[in-house]
Length: 126
Image 1 (cartoon, helix red, strand yellow):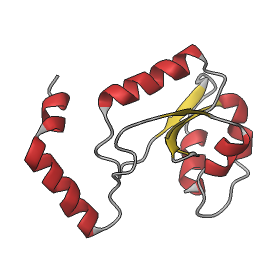
Image 2 (spheres, rainbow, N blue to C red; image 1 turned 90 degrees about the vertical axis):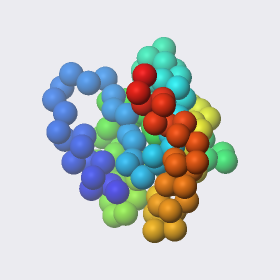
Image 3 (cartoon, helix red, strand yellow; image 1 turned 45 degrees about the vertical axis):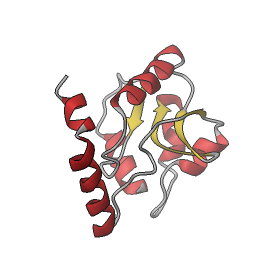
Image 4 (cartoon, rainbow, N blue to C red; image 1 turned 180 degrees about the horizontal axis):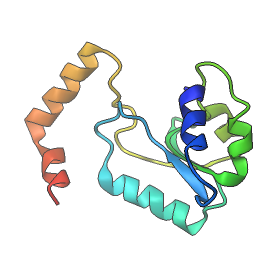
């Protein structure tokens, strides 16, 4: 995780004031909740932000550029969660963060939700 995060940060030039960190295994993230998350960041871009996982920070997250140096000090299969805790990141409820796809069983469960409700398909057509 840390290698991917650092590679992503290195790909940016000097202009971004920060970076949003999202992962691809959370297909049920609510688009409206992500817009609300981005609005909080827009109002205070110097502060780190993170989804709340029962009192712990997680992704989606926002890391302001002023804190990127600490991210480059991470090693191994660790993300920035510990740093987000140290930085006292603002926390947001983001529906769908706990519905991630790590196993085939997770994928079957998520697919069943998609086919049963069709809710996300309708939202993405907007």
